[in-house]
Image: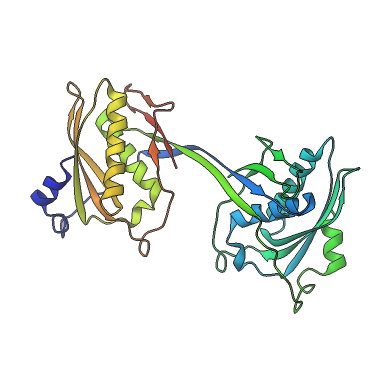
Amino acid sequence: VSQQENDEEWGISASNDGVTFDYPEIKYEFLDNTADVQLHAWGDSIEEAFEQIGMAMFGYMTDIERIENKEMKEIDIQAEGDLMNLLYKFLCEWLEVHGTEDYFIARKIEISEFDRQNLRIIARGFGEQFDIKKHTQGTEVKAITYSNMQIHEEKPTNDVYVIVDI
Amino acid sequence: VSQQENDEEWGISASNDGVTFDYPEIKYEFLDNTADVQLHAWGDSIEEAFEQIGMAMFGYMTDIERIENKEMKEIDIQAEGDLMNLLYKFLCEWLEVHGTEDYFIARKIEISEFDRQNLRIIARGFGEQFDIKKHTQGTEVKAITYSNMQIHEEKPTNDVYVIVDI
């Protein structure tokens, strides 16, 4: 680079003052933005880890500290097969609530029923609608994935990992 | 979902007013965010396509419309091997200027010398330092990649494609 030489030669700040300057036509575009983030949550129980990963998803969308407890939404889901499908459906359902209920953001999620036998969860989210004037804009979560999903039920931390597309 | 039923049952907006509410401890974190975007630019000549993809990179970092022509930076680079390496070095050099020169953003890039024989480019960028109070924050470009890099010198569009990590 001839950056330093150049700065001396041209005199950075003054060089273009007052000079008419035509900006070029735009001949470019942005394509195929792919991105993901891995959510990792834990808890004293597997229920708490599920609650926490739901809150993690909302926490990625905005600064959760600014979300107030104004509304409550309840979900009731049933999975098929295994705990991974239950985790997947749990997050998909919250994402759908967000997408269809005026961008509702839950600051707190409470699972009232966690039925392992029937793979059913009833849970409540407490929060409010996202408001760009009041809340910070984080990154939109577009989809939940099964990619490298992990559920570790070993005590004491019950770690769960989910990669979401953003 | 028992969303609709639930709304009726609980009365959305009023349900939690004035109720003391303890927010749960945070037991989650965000890991391994990977992301990229493909830049596609074109021009009447391969030189113009290079200029345009440089502007595309800066245009991804901020709303280029707000960038004024206050400073000029010059780069002088030499590649080895082929045109792809030249394109790679061209963008890396602008990214380095951005990183080392107070977040300089070029709104306009002009190539004054494009020496195909010796794979050398001399170019000037006109713009100003990024200022969060004045400019919109786009997404930081972290690195240029060779991944699926394409240079199509067929007239009239001379398309070039570069994937950058964000």
